[in-house]
Length: 142
Image 1 (cartoon, one colour):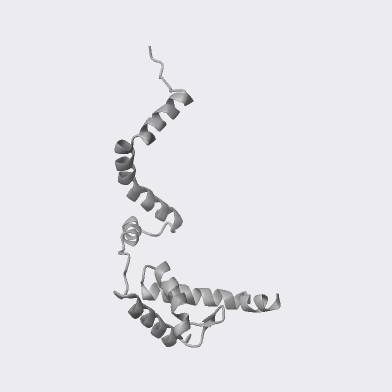
Image 2 (cartoon, rainbow, N blue to C red):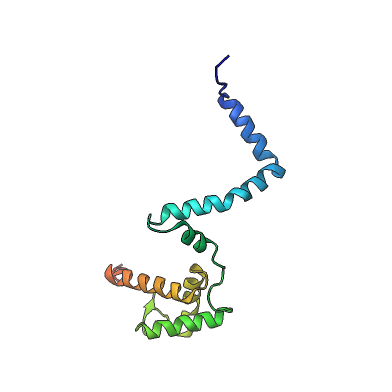
């Protein structure tokens, strides 16, 4: 009488398959859980000092936080690089401030949701890492 019924593995699998096979049930349930899962993942990746509200705000940031069109974002990133002393920098032999560098700058902007300041920091970090690890010297040896 006091025993707890624990479903066997096949019962759990059957319940799971019923849930997954019914899009009318599964999709709304998953959509409802998605923000919680994303927030939990962001909180796990960040240090314990980040407040949940800050992590939530970072997740809810608009897709385009920078200039409204790609051309002005690329130009703003070029100007930011020049102002920070990286006007003559190149990546994979492509000068970043020239017209040929626009696709590379666009990739960094896209990776940082079109936020020029974030893209500049990411690009500076990439260039610093390549310089510290002498990546360009290694590639010229092979």
